[in-house]
Amino acid sequence: MQYTLGMQRHKAPKTGIARLFLILLLLLFVAVLGYALFAYWRYERVSVAPHPCLGAGDCVSVNNVDLYYRIEGSRIDTVPVILVHGGPGDSSLSFKSGFSFLAADRRVLYYDQRASGQSELKKDNQDLSMETLVGDIEALRRDVLKTERIILIGHSFGGALAQRYALAYPERTAKLVLLGSLRVNNGMKSAFFWRYLGPALYASAMGFPPATGADADAWLTRYANQETANRMGNPADAHKLDGTGLVSFIAWRELSASLPGKNYHEELRQLNVDTLCMYGAHDAVYTGEPVAAELASLMPRFRMVRFEHSGHWIYLEEPDRFAAELTTFIAE
Image (tube, rainbow, N blue to C red; front, side):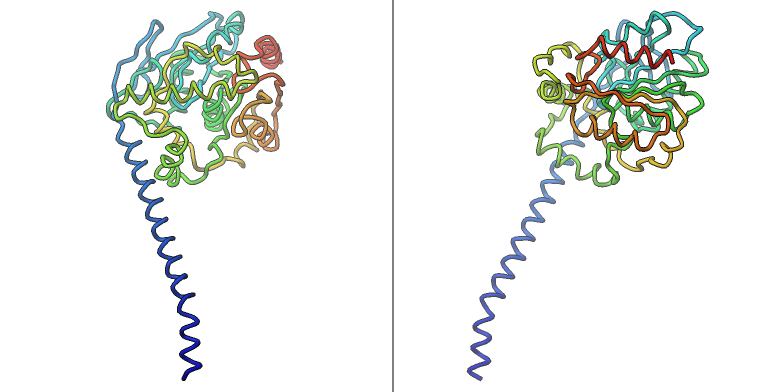
């Protein structure tokens, strides 16, 4: 009996430590879950500040929303270009004048994606999804450019969207150009995770947005501007993106949640479209060389070009070489 009691006294401290450890784990889980729920609420509560289609260009009604667009160039005997901006939530102002050289030989259409830039932002029924944005590009091809085929140039998030369009409409895609492109799903498979737990990760890096749409746009734009220098080949070139407008928080939030899912690897292997991928040596891993190399291993008619002195905005950082590479590719 004494031996048994001794053993019980000897085991009791270990049992107490195990219980304490489990309690601490439970408290940690509750804290993390509470933070995730709080972050989700803070990000989802941002109200929309609706506005009509704005700007000095033209507006066209596309799939129940008015999109801002402008066209440079007038030739109708060559295949036109549609430029697809990044973000999500940026605007065509981010292209600045970096593509005007194309307008000598063809029409170049700049547009702001729905809920972004000067395009209409509705209070309800915005339908911000990758599928809808693909449909918007098709409507611009059909109803505005009135052309059988287009050359699609996508930058950053716009590269993922351009890939999705080419997969949906390969017969309409004459050529595909990807600039510092995201993967087609941004390398994220779980839509549920990024919808409900993503805000906690965003908040850990960015903090919490204001509750009103206009203030949230300004908040997100300040954060994006702070990161610009870090994504340039030469941080002193960050000023080249001055005056490129606000980033739409609503578009960023909803489209970031729409990106995750299928990786489309098998479909990309079957995509029979000439594709040029250009990236900066100093770009981030999720839009730089790793993405280009992965796409090169998948796509059959693919060429990639590395810009040694650039980061994420090669058309602004090395404009002369960029123009030469793009002109050659389009002319081939």
